[in-house]
Length: 289
Length: 336
Image (cartoon, rainbow over all chains, first blue to last red; front, top):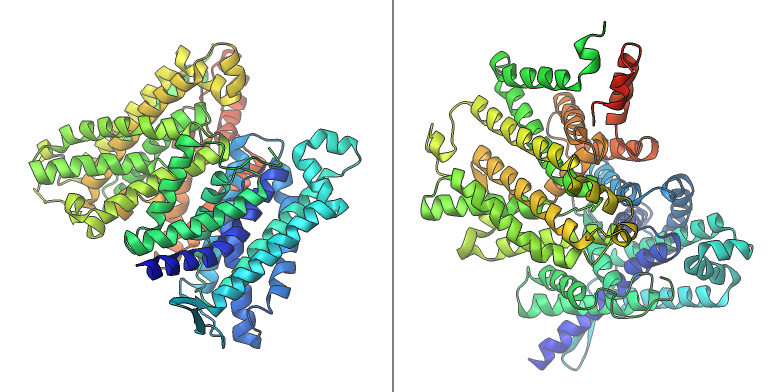
């Protein structure tokens, strides 16, 4: 019983690391650009397909393909901000929500047309590898993914707090007008923010590839998790999103283990609704409101 | 001397209604009538969505919750208790209204995008519940409705035309309600909430109450659509009744047509369903993805170039057409 519990918690924490990469991206874009990116999950999907095709065509290890998926998605993010999001920033809620929503539908369905609905997997030497500490088993691929996810989150934290560009980003998040008066170019900062967020989504995709199948709708599950985690962790709060994502992973895993295989999502949604009912501002304060 | 068609928008409504009424008499191709029924149904659901999403700008992506509740209520009443769907459709509406109270109480705590996400979650939770509780409502397998042949008292008809007229009646009901609300105090309150919720609150609009009220009406109407749809296709399962596509379509037709306008959802549905029918005849139905790819391209274009919706294009044309003869028409454009 205790071993089952520990196993469920470990599995949840490991997948929670991936959720964290996605939700940190969502909360970063929300904090800085004030847009909710409904298409964040589709960028995870694109990251997965990049890794899949690099692996199946050139035999590149998915973890190595991080070096390609992250810069590619950073570039896509800059273009996305410059050519699309920028144009709706001055408009109301409707265009802001439905632009990225339409983009999500578009990317999903283009993927469906190009790649069909088939599941694509990549076998790596470490895909099936496990080791155990006591009765608790660790899947090596998931552990590596978790470790890299935490490393990237830490790097982002250092970037936001230690570099001029990162500080400019936080300044623009706190008060766009005052930041502009201080000589910060918001367009540039926004482009970097969206780029970084998408690079994290791409990283999540590549990290998933050794143990998770790629298919056109794969992003939906991750973006739903991210949305719940972002609300739970207070909108715009990066540390909050990270902690909440890990909690969500554990909650989902416990739900699957103790309520039933199809109940993971119910647990997650119920958590969202409970949060809304009792802590509508999330569990944590924010550095960006 | 001005002509009636240049000064009276009602003249055009009458013409439209006349065309809609004789359409199934002229067109007998069942495939075409099926498309007409889909247009009327989705226009109706769009109209229901638009009351809340368009006028009050509460952008819900979870209207499938009410569609599904309406569908399941009438079906459970029909199969388990033998109660006519004519009673079930109203019961479904009432269940949806009751459900909208707690859902609204939770979701209205959030604004903008996070309201949309919370509504997605509520619809998904309902779908998962209906998938899980098999004894209560057939679970994932769903069930077919008993085919009673031509039984108008049980909302089952032999001819597609009967369904057509029923859907037309629903749409007319939705439009009439929208028309009334648009011209009432409630309509002005809704627009005030949609423009700026804090400012509306500051000038004394009870925004919580007004949002709750419009959500009740919107949920009720959406549920009617759910019952109708299930009675039309004779089959129900959670993935059909609570389909995310229903939520998306409701919002999409309104946005493409023009949110916060009486005729926007109708225009949007006609455009999108016509596109979808054309695509199907070109590509066949085998290519998953074509239809939604085109839909989302249309949506992106509308948002970037015409965020007020395509109805603006039509009312501009109407105004240009009527301006020479009658300056009055400028004050009373087609979309009110």
